[in-house]
Length: 267
Image (tube, rainbow, N blue to C red; front, side, top):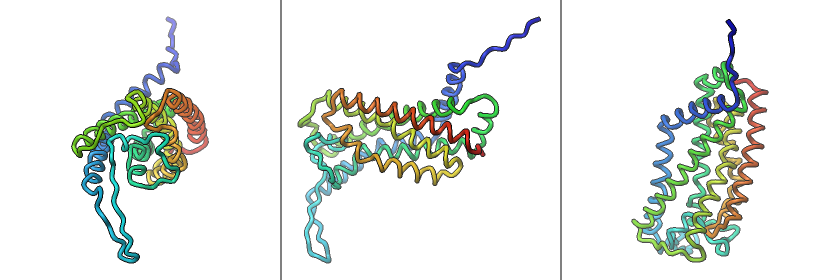
C-alpha cells in the first residue's frame, strides 16, 4: 500500500492563515470598538466645533482675542482641495480630520499582533505549520481590510455629523468623482501605515506599549504627506500613486518583518 502525503502548497497555507486571522479579527471586541470610535468621532467633532464656531477667547496674559473657527463645510473633515491647503496649517480643520484614522489603525494593529506573542499563539503556529512569510502576508491583508472598514465608518459618521450639525454638503473645487478618488487614495495609504505598525509589533512582540510608540512615531514621519497625496480633489493619478506606493511599502516592510521574525526569539 503506497502512502501519499499531500503537499502543503503556498495557496493552501495562505488560505488557512487568512481564515484563522479573519476569524480572530472579527471575534475580537477591539475591532468593533474601533469601528464605533471611527463612526462617533466625526459626529462629535462636527457638532462640537459648529457649536463653538465664532466664539471669542481672550488670552489673560496678553489680552489678545481669538475667534474660534470651526468647519464651514462637511467635506473639510474628509480633506481640503489642493489649492486651499497651507503647508504649515495647524488649525482644527487640518488636524481633526479623517487622517487621524491612521493613528487609530496603528493601535489596532499593535494590540492584535502583540496578542499573538503574549498568548503563545505565534510560537505554536510557527512550530507546527506556518512560515514567517505566510504570517506577515496574512496579517497585512487582514489589517488592511480592517483599516478600510474603519475608513468607511469614519466617512459614514462624517456624513451623519454634517447633517446633524447643519453644515453644507456643497462641493467647491471638487466633484463626486474626486471624492471617490480621495477615499480610494486614503485606502491605498493604509497599505503604508499598516505594515509600519506590523513591523513595530513583530519587533516589540509582547511589549504592546513599545510597539504603539514605535508605530506612532513612524506614522508621524509620513503624516504630513497624507493631505498632499489625498486631497479632496484627487484624481485617478492620486489613486494610482497611493496604490503603487502602498504596494511598495507593504512588500518592503513585509520582507523586513520576516527577517525580524527569523532573527529574533518568538517568546
